[in-house]
Length: 117
Image (cartoon, rainbow, N blue to C red; front, side, top):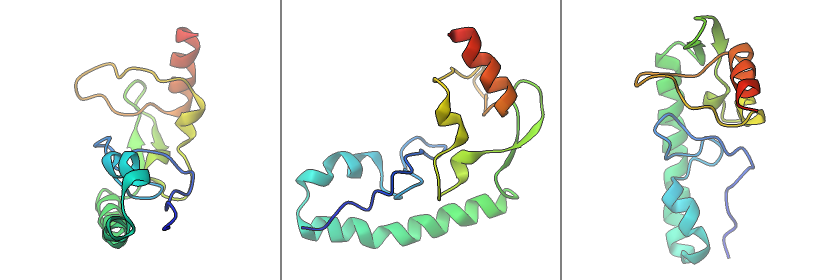
């Protein structure tokens, strides 16, 4: 049986459908236990291209730096890191503040999480 490629870095990309740890889609992750070895090999063969595409998109944007939606500060978005979970997973989920909302810097996310608590 072919083992899961999960590396315990479960952070989703901006689309919310692709894990940046193993580069499987949510559907592939959910179906993994039921897939045959041939189907698992098919998935595994697609993963290097997905990682390469992701890395190219991050590089084209100038890296993982973003501006905080609340204060405008520049910060490193950990959700673009394929080696470890994003720092933001340490906080409870906080809803975005608008239709084009993006991530918050660590200080603003910490403050927003404390308001929810």
